[in-house]
Every structure is written in C-alpha cells, then in structure tokens.
Amino acid sequence: MTNFEKLVQEKMKDPEFAKGYLEEKLKLDLEDALEMLKQKVLNSESKEEIVKTIDSIKSCIEQAK
Image (cartoon, rainbow, N blue to C red; front, side, top):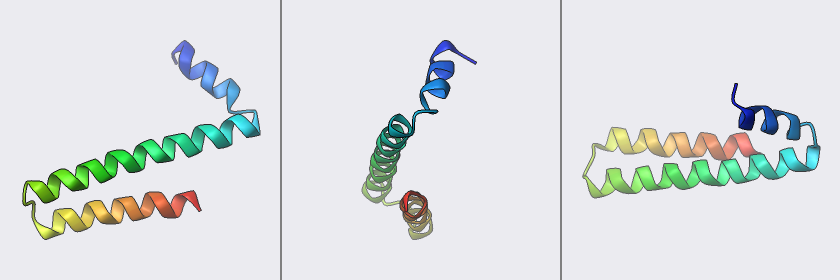
C-alpha cells in the first residue's frame, strides 16, 4: 500500500472527509463514463455496447443514492 493510500484510508475515518471524497469520486466516475459513451456514439459502436455503457452509468447513479 502506498503512502497516499494509507493517508486516504486514515482520512476516510472522518465522516465529513469520506462524504466529500466519495461524492467527488462519483462525479469523476460519471464524467469518465459519459465520455466513454460519447466516444462509442461518435464511433458508431453497436447498440448493445452503447446500452451496456448506459447501464453502467445508471448503476453508478443508483449506488450514489
């Protein structure tokens, strides 16, 4: 485990830090997933691949609730 990972693990014990950290991580994950979806649409990927990506994004959103 890296020093950074140890630091984050220690900081995650603080509920306020953990909440903010997880919210920001979710935002970044969603931005990445949306960019991936955009690229798949622009590259004319199959409908099945696009639906898989949409389902993945939906899953991220549901986990945040």
